[in-house]
Structure formats: C-alpha cells, structure tokens
Image 1 (cartoon, helix red, strand yellow):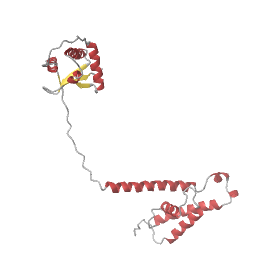
Image 2 (cartoon, helix red, strand yellow):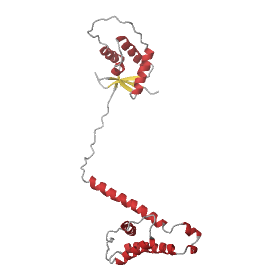
Image 3 (cartoon, helix red, strand yellow):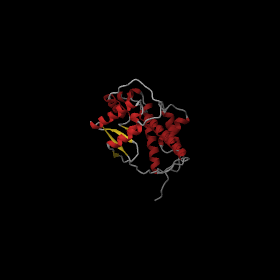
Image 4 (spheres, one colour):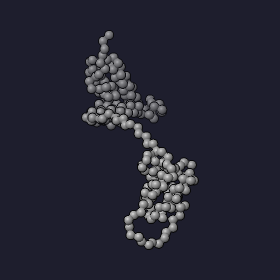
Length: 235
C-alpha cells in the first residue's frame, strides 16, 4: 500500500485556502461574498491533480459546506423559516476563519521567537551548595564583653554636660520596633548605632537584659568573636 504525503501546494487545509482567497481579494472576513468565494474554492479543487484521500475529503467537505451556505443565501426570503432568517448562514464559517487566522498568526510569532532563540547561547544551570549558618547560644558574660567593647573610653577632652535621663522601658520599645523593621533579627551593635552618650548605651543594654529576662528576645553568635545577633522570639 503506497503512502501519500499530506501536502497540497502551500495550503495546510481548507481553512488555510479560504484565508488565502479572502486576503488575496481583500475581502472583509465578517462579510464574505459567499458566491464568489465558493466559485474560486471549487475552481481550485478542480485544478488539483495529486493529493491524498484524507486531504481530499477535508477539502470536499468544506466545498459541500460552502455550497450549502450559498444555496441558503440564494433562497428567497419567504422560503426561509423565521429561525433561519435570524441567523446569518455564514456565521459559523466566519467564526472558524477568525479563530484559524488567530492561531495561524500565533504560530508565526512562535516560529519567529524560535528563530531568535536559536541565535542565543544559554548556560547550563549552576548548582550551588546549600550553606547553613549555625548560631550558638550566648551567655550573659559574652554579652557584657561585647558591651565593654562598644562603650570603651575615648581619648577626648572631658566636658561637663547636662545630665540626661533615659528610661529602660523606652529603650525596650525601641529595640522591639527595630526588630520588627528588620525581619525580627538585628546585630547587637546595630541596636546601639544611633545611641548617643554612655548613659544611653547603658540604658539600651539594660533594656536588652530585661527583654531577655522577659523572654521577648534571644541572643546568638555563630562563633567566637563573631557578631552577636538579637532575635525576636515568637509569642
């Protein structure tokens, strides 16, 4: 049994042929002159000499549909029932052609994208190792040592300034707010970044201790001499 190639010139099917005829004559797809299009379509089928049985059946079925639409268009209106008169016989054909043209345009766009993509060279994905940071718990002595380093005496001229009072409760609220603004975790040094004199630093440190006592926060350190971090504990 011989095998036929399903290909007729440049048309992939009956809808493709109809689109070609409509675009060639610059016809409005929503107002198809069915008599003219049917004549051109049947003339094209008669000119075909070699085609497969499967493709021929598709083209002949569309020809029969066109002839049926043509006959309805040519019938006098008084012979057409009320229900048939309300619907344009070409409506279903128009919907098929509009959808086919939309899909055809999308397919052309995909071919263009594929051609452009073939000009690009991509790199294979890189698999990065999964690093996990280990943070060990800290003791109160470690926290005191860190505080001593932050409030070390500076070689400056002694000046007499007015005494300022800082409330531990206010500093506790400041630290909690700062943790909320930084994804519930900050470096201990950052809690003292905007702190002014030594008295305010001590008040902030006492606030950290009070929050630890109330189990509002926790402190951790990755390794010796590494930065100490404050974490907001979940309720």
